[in-house]
Length: 145
Image 1 (cartoon, rainbow, N blue to C red):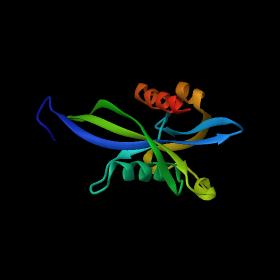
Image 2: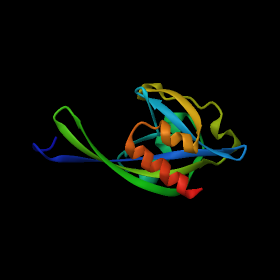
Image 3: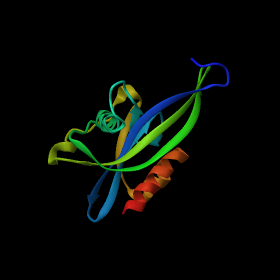
Image 4: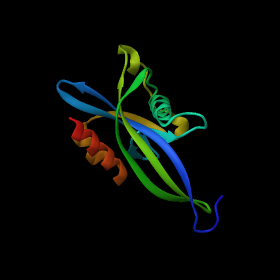
């Protein structure tokens, strides 16, 4: 815990998992704590940012054999938990499946407060995600199309 007024830094990583269906690009959104979100999580000791991104996306949506296509952007936001003020930098990556079976049995990671998964057309995802910093990530994806 830092001194009063001090920001405790956190590093996290996540990804936009996409697919092309009928000529339409879709993004997999997660519903976490009642709002639409993108899969992400905190960096664990000893892992790279890229390893964290793949691990978190695979864990939160139940996918397998995902690979990073490219780095999309980084976001930063601050929040308070009890007496601690955090500054969280999240590194975002574009991901795709490496095998036909990557999406078999996908399901929300309920222990992380995730209650639903939904494939959403990329433009609609911009309207669905709850937080402004996630809109930045979706826009970065749309710019790659």
